[in-house]
Image 1 (cartoon, rainbow, N blue to C red):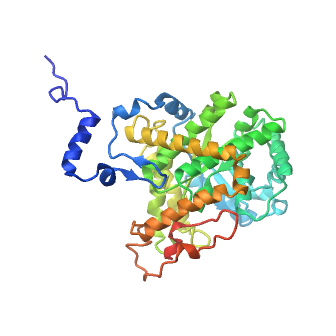
Image 2 (tube, one colour):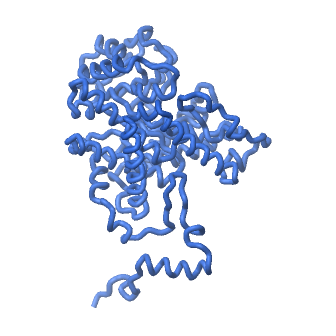
Length: 458
């Protein structure tokens, strides 16, 4: 008679495991010794089992993940606009060296002065997706329509809600929403061209934890939906043109769960708009974090970016931008830094074969529980923001900044209390500097600050 593997061993429940561990701890507190109290104000158990999935909406969570047309992702490096000729050369070079798409950063550039015929010379937008980071969406489309006679791929990375949270002035709200409506209508026939970006970078870089980042980015997306549908657009028109852009931090498993939680939360929002089927078109662009980068030991940034990129891929990103390890040095990124950043994506695809399956984290007892915990806490915080009138109103009342500042202060305190950040407060070659007090950091502005966690040690 054929014996089944492990049939001779008794079945062990999670409670049996806990009882044995309590004996082994010999009086020490289980919670204080083994339970991880995260930055995000919830407890992470040392062990999860199948029993922990029983009360989770596991089918709904996993259904929200199974929406991608392909299990691969877009390798999308970013290029800062220099001039038409140099930027054109960089774009062509990056595409030849493994990039699938390019983001051109036009920050601080007047698009009226840019010759797009020269900038996009020999580049076919129907074959190579190009994204344009600019708030001048209408000016951009006017430029593009002069010489584009086919269906372009790519999009406009315009997020004026995020911009209004970090700047001292912004465009008139009504005018901005009207302009956004206009760009959506103008590009409706271009199914592979997004014009609405909802980003978490301003929250992440100010020091937000994962729950806050999720809640605030979902609140921003809902405000986009509400404002634009109030102007006469159908929800489907808005949703089809929207792309999330999310920063990915160093907490490997938590960041995987964060992306899965975002898709699940977005499915709940879509359900309330009777558009649940559109979860299949949910697009998430990920960018490795600059918040955790160091100027003292920049090569450690390369290592952090690698784990962050893997979290993004395992979490199911549709596009990935890996920042160069020297992008925080205040100068133009080195050729080496840019090449390494591009190759992180290529290695994960061509050598690690991480593009072969959708939602690789599905079924993990640990990650499924993290996904649900993040989703639950983020949804509760989102409802608080919604109760205050939405993301803009909550920001104007000081709620958003106060929440993020508390999270940032907790992260700083952990580092100052001995939590290790390699190359920043330990294992660094440079002479030790006197620590800056968090009280001495500028906190006078009502707007969100672009921070780095390692700044207090530099």
